[in-house]
Length: 384
Ligand code: GLU
Image (cartoon, rainbow, N blue to C red):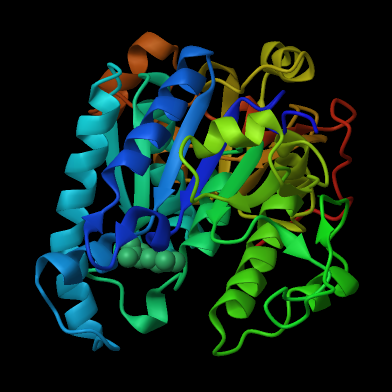
């Protein structure tokens, strides 16, 4: 068996509550320490690791000595408030031993679904990574009500992987991968090491979401897999309960690998290219056109005119001075700000904006250039 982590440089690892918290004894510290060592080793190799950690509610209810059985919403939120602090402190301690800083991020559904907040969350997490810190992410359980919940951290982790352009999502689970049928029900079920594409047949193997824990569990994992693989991340499901769970993957322990459907940047660009309507237009000069065609970002200096009323994160068209649409991308500024900084050089942005701002008008990863990328722009461009 091969090392399934090989070749992956931005890895989201999701840890389930059962791995972190023992009902009787509380936090499973030894396990967490071994996981921390694994993370530190990967980071030392130059990879970026993001942790999506469950366990806040499970740990909080233990600390608060709450009775067994289902909790009311406000009870689980209270438990999460207590558990999350303890969880974050432990991560910070354990990773700190290896000289790593931990950054706590608590997300609600809107943070990955609404574009402005999405860009903010992405910028913050990206900054943490570039500063060498390990983001430890959970749902903001204390404020999320049922309508605005991801509900499960498998889906949250998949959204994080998509948002951050990760190339791998690892789900550390209580089962070592996907089987042809739920093994608890069908002893003849066989393990599937590789899934090229999530077809209906694969979905059927996960079983329906039901009361039985592992079945529902596999269904949410396959749903997470659909989100992740479509955005260009591969996904691994493996048993996380052994010590050094990431080393175990590298050693070739049993797992299921779901192949990514394409690379993350291409997937993102395809998504941008597929937008039929654009919220506005930027007219750019010759120099900027050249820069775009050679794969660079669009800087404010190259922008001559700004048309439309768009918000930061909207898809807008980029035009030449002759009126040809040459690119499409997600803009980093609101229209009003874009007008203020059009034509300005980087060192003048702060004075015009009143705050430091971002160096780019459209980042190259958020930009699809006509003829310049492997993805083609859809031909209809209408202003919304
Ligand atoms: N966010 C929840 C917690 O930290 C866990 C959700 C899940 O396990 O999927 O307790």
